[in-house]
Image (cartoon, rainbow, N blue to C red; front, side):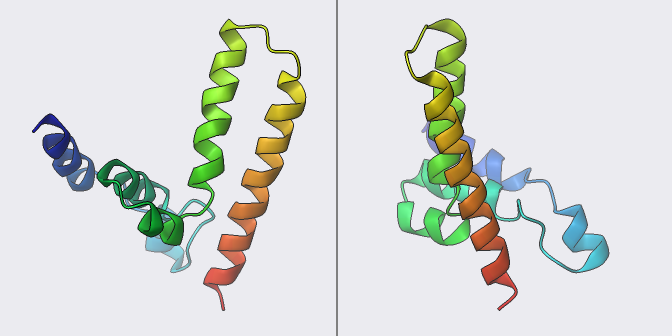
Amino acid sequence: MKLFALLVLLEDFMMPCLTKKYFGVDCPGCGLQRSIAFLIKGDFAAAWDMYPAIFSIIPLVGFFTASLFFKIKYANKIILSLLIISVILILTNYITKFN
């Protein structure tokens, strides 16, 4: 029941994209909030369709946070790899929105 309440609150208080509102075009982050909402609901396909980079950003944030508290052997290489994957997915998604 608490998860349902969280979903209702999350969807009611999503921030609008100011770039889209004022300039009429999507920004590279458009869809991130809705993608998180889909993930919480368990709809992974819709989350991927909305914002594919969410599947690399979550591990990136988690691994970066873990590396602050624990010594991990190849932390820098793993973080850099996840960052590159995230940037590629964000840019690819952004470019395909214009087609």
